[in-house]
Length: 255
Image (cartoon, rainbow, N blue to C red):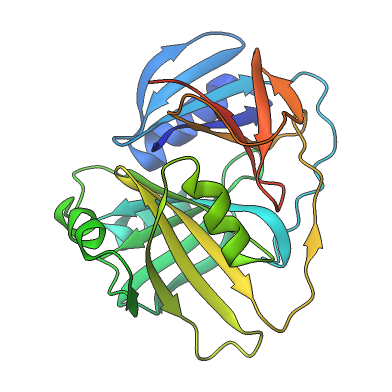
């Protein structure tokens, strides 16, 4: 089942709401002192304030298994990048032309969550489900930034595919990275109008992170499903938290 929402811990609700409203066109659905919900076209962003946060163990090198970034499709990347620079936002990667015929950039939100903007329809090198690709392309250029994917690094693509197949995901497509000597490949698992973007590195040593539910930044993905494979690894906001084989946390939120 598709991603219903992305859960983030933040240290200042008002600051984060304003960041996502101004820079990513988010529409405020609900805002309080301790939590907020924002609409990002194909999913919601759910923010929770943490008053005594743990120090995050997330590492931004893509070789740490589990969560990597949250991605959005845009039709005006350069204008948004200019506005982000004017606002003093910290960039991880300035805009580049990437494999698959798209233009991308990476930057951080106020609490260190890595975000990506993608402009243009991805021209996949491998297509495993043509109907899913056609539905992806049919979404077109968004009028405002549209939630597109959550990315994660994994150790075993087949184990990841099997795990998410139990949640209704199909293997849609892939992109090769021929200039990366670490054996870097990207695969896309699809359900509904968004993807799980899966990174594999065939020749590089990877580390594994224990899921953190009390640190600033990404907490979990919420899937609109009825059940999850495996046993919960914790709880957040009254929901059991599960994890995939590489430690990406998620919760089940029946539609």
